[in-house]
Length: 289
Image (cartoon, rainbow, N blue to C red; front, top):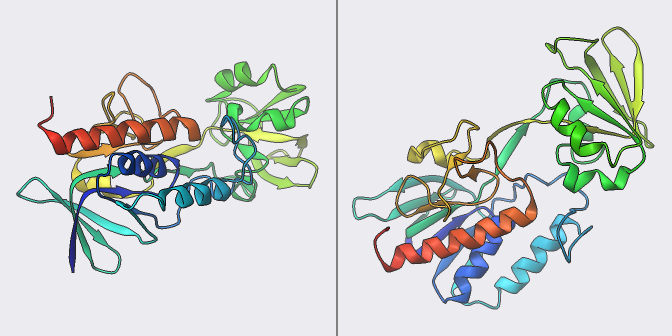
């Protein structure tokens, strides 16, 4: 079975939800596809979001869906998209896991990124709690404590950001770093993190900060042959337009070439979703300027 719509939005996080709201506000047809995968799924409370500071991410998503229900041109489906394929007439076929195709005149990719963490025993269990990557989103709650910076690569940048918040900072090398005994394992003690080093010594910190490697959270950029930045994120212009006409990308999976990496926050994802929605609607009206 094939269904047609104006715009398909793939991804049900902040970027996709905001895009859907913006499109609904001008009465364009949109289908939002949400497979239930979220980068911040392990985070109990989101921060640095004005009016929502400390709100659990599922609460925000539920509120957004309730608001979208007021817009009859927007449909939300809990289903996974598997492929996005350009059609000869300039539209796109979005194939769902169940085999159905949606044909749309424009597509907004909002599928986020996947974090690849260093190979440290126990680190995955701490991720989103006592191990994080964003000082703006995560540091204040541990203010005055002992902060560990995992890896020498991001040390200078993270140190400069965290010094006003932390009571003290300790650099914890990873395997392959030039100096010091690398971290072998980390364990949440309930009141902090015990860090075991390769020489058998231990450190205790309240929270760990690190910079994970980022990978596309979905295969669509590769399927469509979209231009990428050196970071691996999709290259977009100031209107969130990709290298392929009719395809926009919003959230931490994309950024403009002037930036070294995505701006990774809920607020920035929402802003990008709104801009992408505007660009998608404009693509329905006339040719790309």
